[in-house]
Image 1 (cartoon, rainbow, N blue to C red):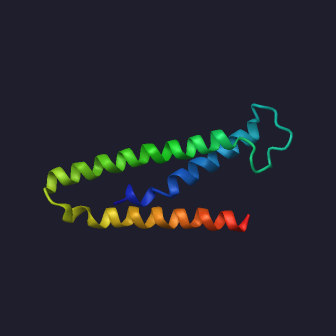
Image 2 (cartoon, rainbow, N blue to C red; image 1 turned 180 degrees about the vertical axis):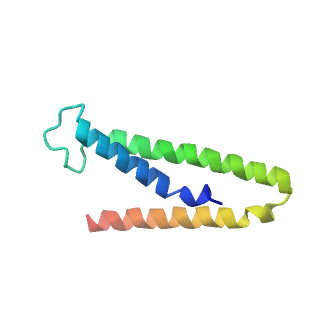
Image 3 (cartoon, helix red, strand yellow; image 1 turned 135 degrees about the vertical axis):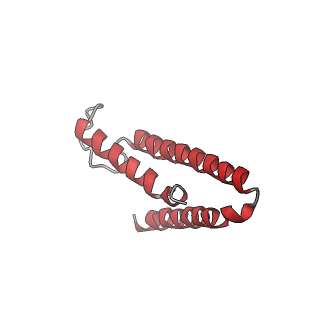
Length: 100
């Protein structure tokens, strides 16, 4: 349950940490690191990479729970949490695009 509740928080946190590190170290010597697109590729790479790793962990945990319980009833709540977070994350991204 805990792993499924981290679907939005982990990628956002990892992306912000990567952004902070890249902005402070500035390996490409960009003059304005405050610009919105500075280091966009690496930031997205770390964010989506952490999401991929987290989803692999969540799927592995789901398979472990399913093998132990032999029923999908034990997975209803964690799957609902993941689905709600993904939908809310997509909605937040869409509205963030409108706001900027």
